[in-house]
Amino acid sequence: MKLGIFDSGAGGLSVLDSLLKMQLFQEVVYYGDTARLPYGTKHPTSIIDFSLQALDFFIQQKVDIIVIACNTASAYALDEMQKKCPSIPIIGVIKSGILAITNKLKNLDSKILILATKATINSRVYQKGLQELGYTNLTSIATSLLVPLVEENIFQGPIVNEVLKYYFKNLDFIPDAIVLGCTHFPLLSQAISSFFDHKSLLVHSGEAIAQYLYTILPHVSKSSNTTLKFFASSDVAGLKNTAQKWLDLSSYKNLTIL
Ligand code: DGL
Image (cartoon, rainbow, N blue to C red; front, side):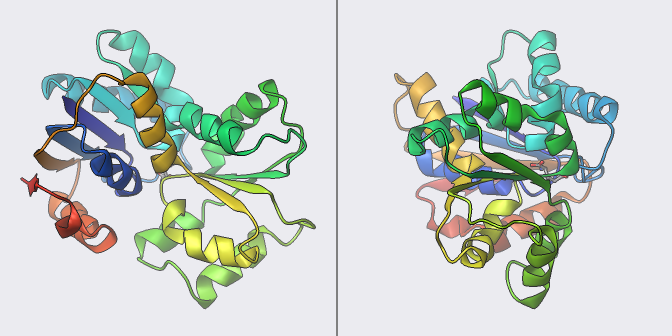
């Protein structure tokens, strides 16, 4: 199986991490649209346009399946991408994130906090999906400022805490669950969890999509070797560097990076 992973930039590495651990793919092609990041502040038309261009790249690469690691692209472009290329299964992260919530939170009154980029929050995909399943206690906050912090490799400390304080100043409750609805946010898990005294369950899109793939690919067997290839619309060396920093790539068994 050849997997294509698409993100607006480096954030999708958090999803790549979960997918590599599954060891289901002989080849993994990661594409980050680093020249045009961030998507989360862009107009839907541009998000769809950029995502369809990424799809052309994956079609050329002859991948068997595509995971859209980017929440913003999943929110706006999944349907268009599927329409353009019905022959390749294309999986977005939103559905699996919602599924992970339903698996973990049985009480429909649970207080759920959704964190994502401005575009994802405005699309209301998480809110609508959860409401349709009966969850009523939803709060959503666009926390776009967390994206550049992660890009700067700042994962905890005073600046992160100030930004969290700023965004959560009007919250008068501790959420039962927090949806980390942006690729970058799992890297801030420790800071976010500690802000809420480790009392909230964090739902991470990468882990959720890995679980989801197991359910839709039940017959695929483990692959003993994986080849990983990085592509970017700008500075692929920078992307590889970030991957080395954020993921402990040497810890994966039988992984060759090209
Ligand atoms: N990858 C984006 C997401 O998950 C975050 C970064 C961006 O705004 O492009 O929504």
